Image (cartoon, rainbow, N blue to C red; front, side):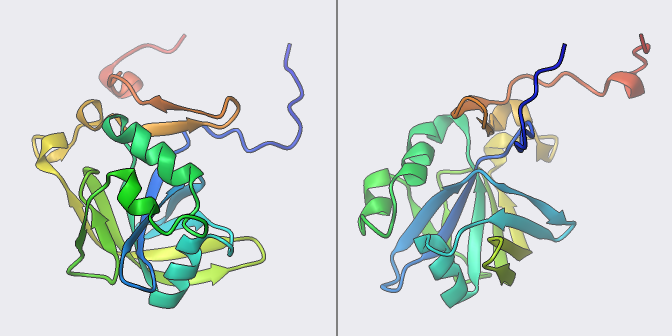
Length: 185
């Protein structure tokens, strides 16, 4: 039997993305954004309301970074999702995260995270909060690579469990199933 859940976006896994920007005074800012995805082979899509400090920063500087939240940074990742930069100007400093200037866009790379996509704003539509960014450069810390490719079991990216409002770290690799010759039932 199936239970009627109404109109709910229950998409799993839901990536947990940490968006990096600069504030007006040049200090780094970080925000946890659980509503984001691949927009195209060179784009990211984020759903960010206009009242976020991060959105204001992106619109002013036309640049931002996207980091993949991971298990080792779960506390800081949760903190930057709960505390508003509009209310606490020292949010980034209190988070314990670290930043360095990107060579490609006017936004900080948050060095605590293993994956960073450096993006330029392509478009923002405030009525539906749709933001598209073009990926200019991507860097990955070698600690999460195996054979030159991202090893999810080393990265341990977070996914947001929207129905239970909690985080889950993605676990072991289970393979390619059918391509590996497993039979259909």
